[in-house]
Length: 247
Image 1 (cartoon, rainbow, N blue to C red):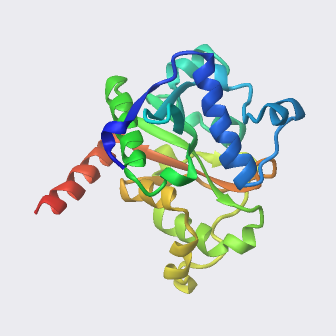
Image 2: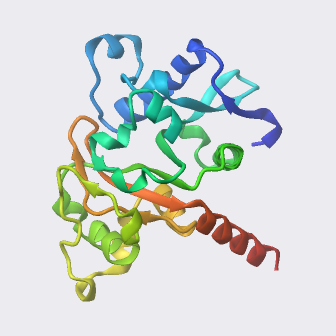
């Protein structure tokens, strides 16, 4: 795919937000088995009460005039002035109150665009948003498919032992699902890594951490972890990665 065929920007009106919600329906409901209310299902939309309070970052394929990727993002000031962070329904976010934080959520890309340049452009757009608003901490719930923690015990234990957030950022699940189900010295790290979704691994490579405890989300048919990234650390990791590539 040619990067010039894409545009990355914030949604400008309700119609563009609905286009994002249609994509979310295809990914989260049709592909992943999430549930939604009857009215939304009839319209082919995945939506909730938080949507009006978020900015919606869109990846648009200009050739077909279609939204093919989306992030919804909410800054601390937006949360304080509105409904609050979505992540607060799953995690105690008190430790983030002193930071300029940005919540990431409902991120998805249409199936046929997942291996191309589009994802990288969407991340670049997110980086520009973070820079513009001087964000200090990014966070959001990220999901594993399925609701059986034992089936994911290796991956969850690996995340807890290797990437637990520093104490000052260590948010805790409100309905606590223990993550360290397997001792560190008994883990098969390679098998655990194979269970971890690519998006979560990408955040970890940029210096991400996970909060304390997972959350079982039966509505979305997922087990969620809270990912956190200090932007200073993330930028340094990003620079080091590309310096090595150039070298």
